[in-house]
Figure 1 (cartoon, one colour):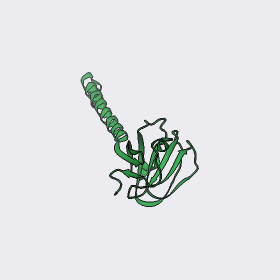
Figure 2 (cartoon, one colour):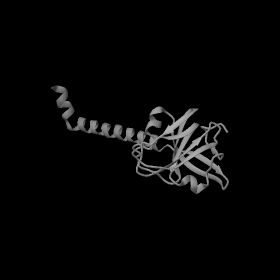
Figure 3 (cartoon, helix red, strand yellow):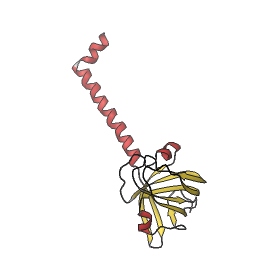
Figure 4 (cartoon, one colour):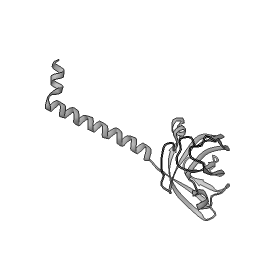
Length: 160
């Protein structure tokens, strides 16, 4: 009973409220910075280099979530799914609202395949073949920069 009265006093309540706000802001900022931590990625095509900022999805949980539930993405951004080994890769668009281009890339940073304009919310499996990573861009981005199989991708995930 004594503890309850202490916590209910004005000063203790103010201190508790202040700590609560501080913790809330800290964890909100930590979560926001984790989602918005962008890395530079460069595609080298016949028309020259093209710079994008990508979020890195390199853990199983991050790769499973990907761009699900997002309603929009800036034109110069994307997501890099790093699988850490060359393996047969299959993707889908379940719970993904944004139409996407999926770029399948080798360990050496070479574009292997492009699945253009994947249908939002589809559970159809998109088979990328043997690849090391997948880069998801807004639909039409690959065509806009002239990206094709054999083009180079520069990012620390690739050993090129």
